[in-house]
Structure formats: C-alpha cells, structure tokens
Amino acid sequence: MKELDRKDFLKTAGAGAAVAAGTGLPLAKYLTNRSGHLTFRAAAGLPRAPLPSYATQIVEGQIDLARGTGLVTSRVLAGHPDDTSLVGLPGLTRTIRITDVDADREQVRLRGLVEDRSQLRRGESHRVEIVVDRKSSLVKAPFLGRQLEHRLADA
Image (cartoon, rainbow, N blue to C red; front, side):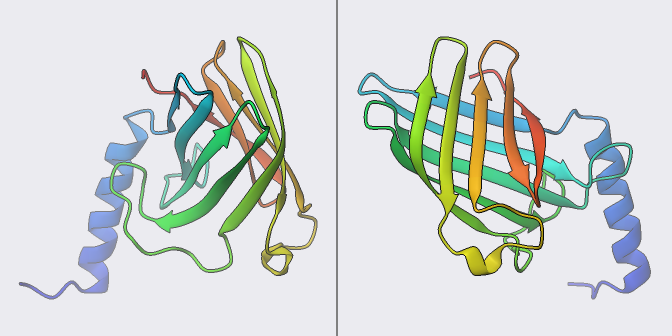
C-alpha cells in the first residue's frame, strides 16, 4: 500500500468534503418500539455550512419513555458523516444520564445531566436538553454549549 503524504491527504480530504457538501449530510434515525423505548442516532457534519465538514458529531441514545430515564452519548469523530473514522476527538465525548422526558405526538424532549463534568468546557452547562421533533423532522442536541439541528432520515 502506498504511503499517504500530506499533499495527497489534503487532496483526498478536500474531495471527500466536496462530495459530503452535496449530499445533505445531517442524518438521524429514531425508532420507538411497542414497549415505549426510544432509540435514536443522529449525525451532523462539523463545522457547519458553509464550511466543509471534517468531523462528525454523533448523538445516540436509548430512552425508556414510560420511566423518563435513559442514556445518551454524544461524541465527535474525525471524518465527514458519510465516511467517519473510528478516531474520536479528545475532550468532546459526553455521556448524558436522562432524568426527565416529555413526549407527545410531535416532540420528545429529553432533559439530563452530563455524568463527567470534568470534560465540560467553559460556558458549557452540565444540564442538557435534547429535542426529537417528529413533525419538523429535526433533532436538536447540544455541542459545546450551543444547540445544533440534525435532520431526521426516513425511518
């Protein structure tokens, strides 16, 4: 296998970003089963448009809607959403213990606490809110103190 030098890497990364930019990358999937459990996975490219995405925020969780509890993990991986690597960017992983759920036909609003507060950056709250909006096909999840929108994919 040919060794990849810096120039070739940048060409490859640029081509990947160009392809990614044309595909509408923010993706999310959710599933609510009959026992009242919500399972979801959302991915969005970082940085946001108009810049090309060189990293991917992934938010995934399993929630018991009846009990109002669950666990959500947010992490950032190197690579654009269509071709993420297994390399996580340090200091950007959050494990969120869900403590309250408000659900109706259109939205599921999850509230919780970041378990390891030592990972938080200045200005980031340990209290988290994630909204799965079925009507507008959006998932709103925090990233470094700001809410980002992720589009729901067809389930």
